[in-house]
Image 1 (tube, rainbow, N blue to C red):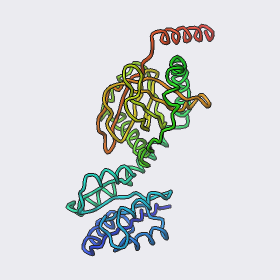
Image 2 (image 1 turned 90 degrees about the vertical axis):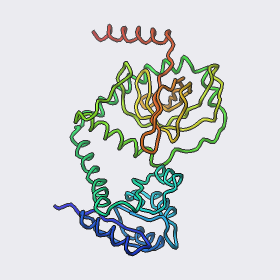
Image 3 (image 1 turned 120 degrees about the vertical axis):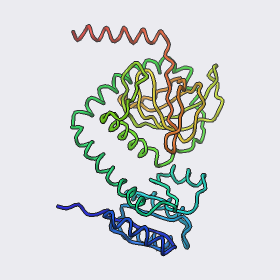
Image 4 (image 1 turned 180 degrees about the vertical axis):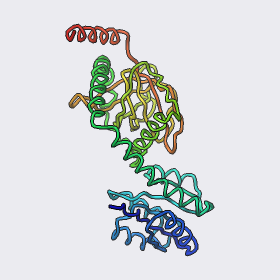
Length: 317
């Protein structure tokens, strides 16, 4: 059975730009509908399951920003690409943080527009084929590795429990993470794995222990050397974890320094980790910030963990 072409909706009040974009996408195999204002685009989106929305922001009857927010609020939502003369940096950041797939200026050549839209869907198909090729054994290995890591971190968390618990007892409103951050991490991780497999990039593991990919929302609290809060808590997303450190994504940069990190365990039912963390890396990556850190693990806990591992090995041998 042949695969149906992706369906695209182009919303633009300028008839010349509508036709230019429509022709570029049709040439790349898209089935296209057009709308000349935001309300007409909304009605079409309600009636038809589109795979892609390409929209100008300056739309009559309903602004493009409102159209995008409404579109992304529904699941499943189409891919959304802004094609606009507007280039306000704050507006761009806001829309990308909400989950918009790309923001293009109308100086882009029509053939390049078509190529970029085609690439969005080809990349999805490639990722799906890579995921299928992973086989059914990967989740078991992931769970086993994560269980070992979380058991070690449980001992560290319990060591700090008395000092950490009061830091999170206060009722504080913490802004939610943008809706697009989880999908961004999934795409980023898939691209990093693919690049490593193709030997395009050597991904260095600066931690001394294996890391496991996870997706967990954590609360981070910046503290001084006496464990006193120095800023309001924030939410960020954990990308991967090891027994010595963690990799995260956040909407803004965090200074190199000390944090207290709290997040729910995956393999220990009902348990919440609370650990001190030293931020060692913070760099922009797309519209977010990639943040790495090392857990502050006391020597006594390291020694206890080593002895526990030796005892477990002696029992099984």
